[in-house]
Length: 177
Image (cartoon, rainbow, N blue to C red; front, side, top):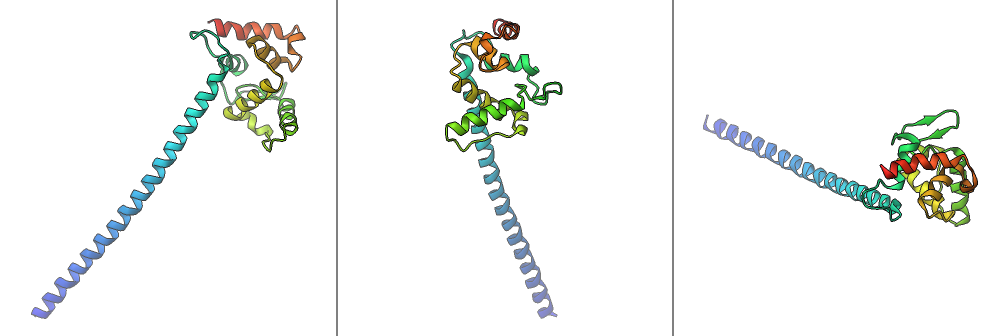
């Protein structure tokens, strides 16, 4: 009987050690996952910081109390709506980008010997739309707020197009307000 009792106790102790080992393994796996997730969160935070920093370049020395030019254009174009769609012009996203704009930006990138290209679906993504906006403005040497707004609305010769004057007034009212 004593042998049976000792055997039973040894089995119970073995079982408990086995359970402890499984729990330790599980805990270690969870710790590893937590570290990986923490790194992912850190990298996403870095991406957000970068996007915020990139948006600052569109201040164009306007006074500190004004809305940034890019934000004003986004408001006029779509009320900041990334899902905005104008079926009449096939204009998409927060900056209401048409297919001809994507084609023009890709042409610019090709001439610059860049490997970067945009798709029509990129128009739905705010960060990709902003990048296209940046490439367009830099390529055409647009520097003043009025030039940027009017040429965004009317193409590279937007300053000569009287129809873009009303668009500029709407953007300007967002900057002044």
